[in-house]
Image (cartoon, rainbow, N blue to C red; front, top):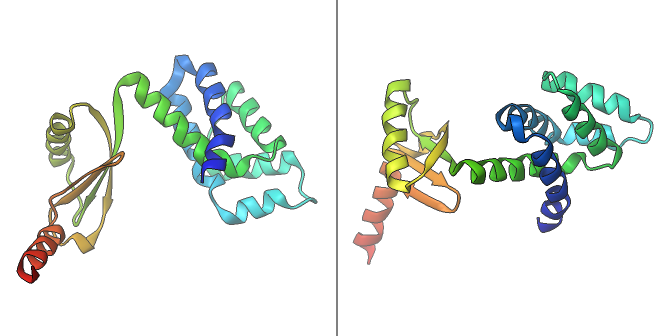
Length: 176
């Protein structure tokens, strides 16, 4: 959806410039707002002509349960007034990309068939950072269909050591 990315870019860049001193804090409240703004019911509520901008602002901040700094309040009001609430998740994504580029890190999603304990996650993070050659911001998601092992997605790179992937490889080898 290139159009949404094009709409979101100026907002993300402006927010990045304003929030340079507190990128981590800004990222946290922006991600919380983006998660709520991605809800179809909220977008429908915001598009209702009988609903005012202040009502949308109040509902969004109430559901997200975040304490916005002054710059965050101004940013959110501007997004709502310009009718760009649907672009907020993309703004958060682009902001995160800029933040990661500044710090030399990347977002990574680790899919695991079972929950990963904290000490194990630390060891996995170390090994993955060595493998990918950069600092990784890990997010863990359970996926029981993997049967065992893990599947890691870093940008457009995928490292799949799951049992499911190995079984698929065996299936291909046996049917070839």
